[in-house]
Length: 146
Image (cartoon, rainbow, N blue to C red; front, side, top):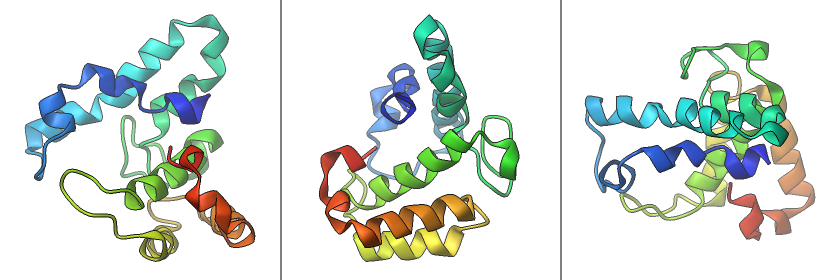
C-alpha cells in the first residue's frame, strides 16, 4: 500500500508544477517538496492505513540525510521508505517524462549503484538489483513502475 500511495500528496500540488517541462524554480521545488507531508496527512486520516504513513511521509529522505521533509539519515529512515525510494527512482528513470526521454534500464541500474550509500540505502539497492538480475521480466511489468 505504501508503494501505491507514496505520491498521493501530489494531488495537492498544482498541475503546472507537476507537469512543467523544464527545471523547477526554487519556489516550485519547495512547493513540490510538500507532497510527502500532504500525502502523510491524507493517509493518516484513514485508520487502516496507519502503517503506511511513514512510507508516504519519508520516501523522499536520502540515506546521507540530504532529503526531505525532515532530513532523516540512514537507518533513521523507515525501511519501507528506503525501499520505495530505490524502486521509485528506478521507475522514474525507466519511463519518459515531459522534460526528458528515459535513460533506460542499464543507466538506471548504474545510477542506483553509483548513489548507493549516498541517496539510497546500499542494502536496498543491492537487493533490488539482485531481484532484477534474477527476474529481469519484473522490470517490464507496469506494477514495477511505482
